[in-house]
Length: 428
Ligand code: PMP
Image: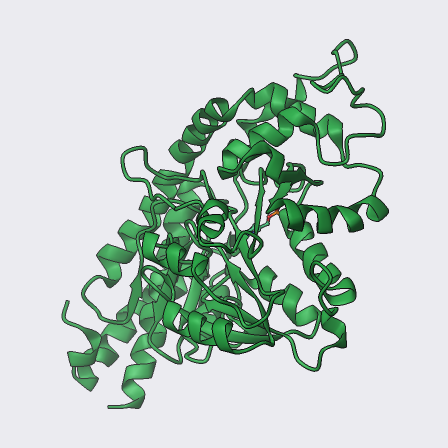
């Protein structure tokens, strides 16, 4: 079919009639489908059930350091967990601290500490008139929620196929002292699945921040979450790159096993320069006597090493790949020629990002809901929930079964078509 914008009013109305009939038939089925959050499916969680068996009442529960994991001690995390997560996020094991079950929690703590106590001796942000964070958009809603919670002003930075618009990033960071941070999901980004190019990472490392306490919040949440064995993105390691450029303290790197083992019951970590880690420990010593070492041990005994983790992720990919392809194939087939939306084919991560005609995203999400399909709220991928174009929609294909996805994708494309027709009709 020709692009919708090239159809006459009569042709559009005719198409609308056919689509409305199909939509109403699906609506009558009273479905309950959810493509809103990037949760692994039960089949993926089943892959890690062996973790329930690696520790039992007869297990040796001492870690490599000789410490009994049932008791207090080892604030930085057990050495074998440091090794495993360091390998996962490509840093030296002495540059990582293992926390609890959530990297988001570490990010929250990191911003909170900077607000109340400052960064490595600098003025606490709460004493400053203005604190700004750069937010590559579209981005991760929970990042934006943290900075909003602390009253930090958020500045939109458009994403490009190579990562954030680095001209804008350099302009802000190198000249505006109130810019204290930037949220980055550098590999298989949430929601676009974009991996920052080598040049983007190098430009990050070469930044000359106006603020001495500026930090890059490098959330490497999807570092090993490939969909394909033969088509994988590669990301330059940022800590080493910053060190080479004489900026060793400019970055905090976050990671977790949430979407490797169990979300909410995984292991999370922060990697940073020795000076940053010492600053972090000052708070952590007050905050806790130690994180859950039995969970750390369980992870190490189950995965053994990074090779175990990588082969485990291949099993995740086997489950995820057909789901991504199911959605992408429907988008290609149903919307390919209509010029009413665009999307990116990611090689990893958890999301597909869809850009509708400007002014249509909210209406599409509402339309899909009418037929029982819950999508991430339109606007969520922007700070303050405000997408200036009302265009971006995040699709999360991981949780539904393949059968559910087939029908969910159908509802989605029908909703896109119907809303777009109305939009185009407005201007005819
Ligand atoms: N960062 C990103 C980019 C994510 O997409 C998610 C999970 N959806 C998280 C962090 C949350 O990670 P955790 O479970 O370790 O808090």
